Image 1 (tube, rainbow, N blue to C red):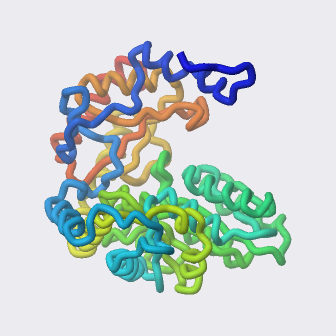
Image 2: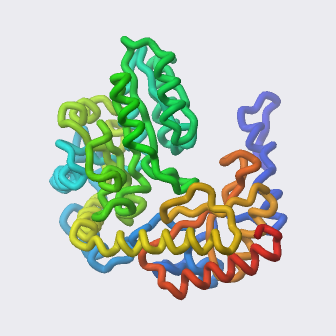
Length: 405
């Protein structure tokens, strides 16, 4: 047993028993290794299951063209630059990808980060300064919240954070109306919300922002490749107007890799490039991922049928889950929560599905409020109709046993 002191900073670690209690119950659903990835199916605990817990929305992580591009990048540049973007970590690949991303999202410039989390952490903390206000949707992703909190810390508490009701432009306006007119303001919102699966009311948020001379920061992690006729995200979904001043995206969803970026006016991106601590003090995105992402970007640009298939699947699964009696909330994308409202039943439902060949993600308090525990399901364009129907029938049978439907 590890040595403990009377006043031990690790005491809380030794006192933490929650995970072990759940492990002993047989319902622990986390950190299960994937032994083999077969696209829409994976092997876990020696058994093949249908994967409906992945954000690999277009199924491109297993595309041979993407894998080949990653291999060629390694052959040319090695596995790592072992340095940050600022000093020795910028390859020609970074610059090429940034230029292509900027064109893809209709902006002057883009900046690549090693992870999507770091993109939000780095961009938000860089642009927020003393005596400035940030207004954040209550359901925004943790990386947004952490970016804001880093800015608060860096400014000695002089960044003011305000949270407005989820996807509610009316409450946003009420909040803005109570702030000093002469102090700068930034509105931050997800494009597609990662648990609810609903789409931000971006045109309405833009009208409110303009009335109060506020800027908009848009997180498109779950909307690029998912929304719009050609997968260009929520702005294309709403007709192609420019609603956001800064746009963030990640490569760990539709792009089938790891990394992230922000895009906007050249002057703003150049400022972030020189002021973002998470960019300056983190080793840069490795060559294999740069090559893979450039390949997936080309596929998304030239093969919109993947996005169309994904959107068709989303409509079908929402309709069918509702018909079976499941509560799916405000879902309107391939992220479809099955609302349960009880932690124990959520774990039981997860295990029943897993034992019957379907893997989804159990989300319980404190990640969500106690009465909003849910099974988060998400779909890929490579799911077959037969797999989707198998998911539905399994959910119906096991959900009825547990009294969920």
